[in-house]
View 1 (cartoon, rainbow, N blue to C red):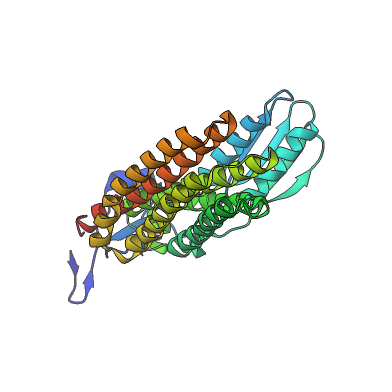
View 2: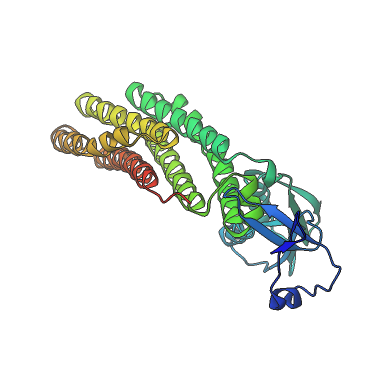
Length: 332
């Protein structure tokens, strides 16, 4: 409503003012969103207070359950996590906790036999979702390339280098998932990150797909290492077909990521169409494996590698589908 010739007045709902215990003369803040709407905040806009939580750990608790609890707290936006043991932390528990702290970009600030206090050091509001996603993709793509190179050349040393990169992808995965979950709940943070609510859903799916691709590159590298350790070999004809299929899958994956960021619907459709070619080569690998590879361990390793190649191609198609879906999203 107008007040005089040059001023406008916004009327606030009485229920909302009571809910936030506001009285006449109190200050409210206005935040402009990326769609040009205004958000009214009670009081002066303050920096969001960090969330803290205390977890009570049983001495007999399995390390994997402790790690899952820490990850869950991290993903739900807790900046400070205090672990308190009902007895004392075992050596295995302490090792597991310190490992996940490094993966989550946290730091242990206090530690004794019964208490571990950790805190995240990253400022979400300064992060770039797109930059982090691109870096995550670059690591996963290099893992794929080196995994298939190690497979072709039967190079266990290169395969071990791939295996050691998986934590780097996890770093980005956990950080991005935390960021996107927070942005979905906090309009102000979403505005700072230049995100719409639908972006949070699409980017979350993309993070999972990139992480899964890295996991399958890791699986191929692990099989190369195990075959080398047992002095066993996949036959050359099968290896050649795996290399061909792997190249198609990895190229599709890289094309899918580029299509996602460039909003390229045409190439996305082509990527989905390549699934048939992967299926055909996979059937050739299966038939040749049946003829040439008789050792049970080699057969199992071949099946595992085949599955990883197919999965990488499927995740590329998933990313391509997201790109096509985003092309037709409603413009607010």
